[in-house]
Length: 256
Image (cartoon, rainbow, N blue to C red; front, side, top):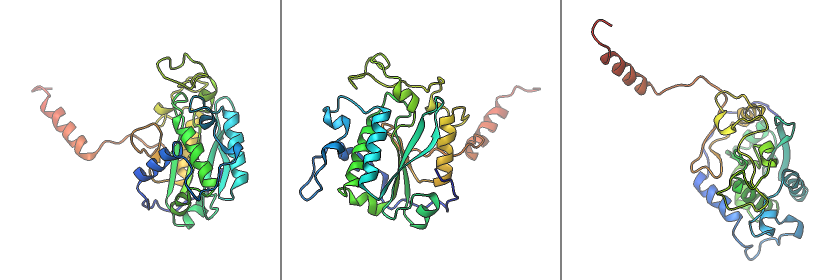
């Protein structure tokens, strides 16, 4: 993955909420009249099984390779390696074929990052993104190509994704083969690692974000947009710090 410098952050041309709705619709909406029919080998495993199963890591990579061969506007890349040595995939979507940070910022379009599978048992976002990427590859979602440069990390916790068991999340309905594991192969929760960055997965993601400097970042099934950023010392709002100092000074006993 190229890490060439990028320009200053720019505002999004389309609301992130609208993009989220598009992502959701990709996994449930039937093809519309005039759309390119979906080839047999371009249906996702989730779609083929009535959303009861999900693709493995190897099946996901194979599917993305097929999409890359289908469309010149999609590029499969790898931005790091996991603790167990698995390559960490990212798909770049660009109408201008701007597949590096420098090229993307020259296009003038906002950059949006979608991060899936931070907890590998919560993998709905991966399946929705595979459907969306397929629709983009077939030019059935031209509005995505027209509006932005899109980065999709289909599986972030790639090691936990392959540690499948029906007992990982016993109260969850599906996937039927079992769910991925919450932590990495080294036992680290990636959703708690952005500040300390102990995991190689975290460091790889921070380098990806630092290179591309995306705007809002969506983490399905997270309820709100987030934007991970390179490590910095923790900071509190100035107003909170002043209030905290006042409370501290007034609570001291005389003579202390």
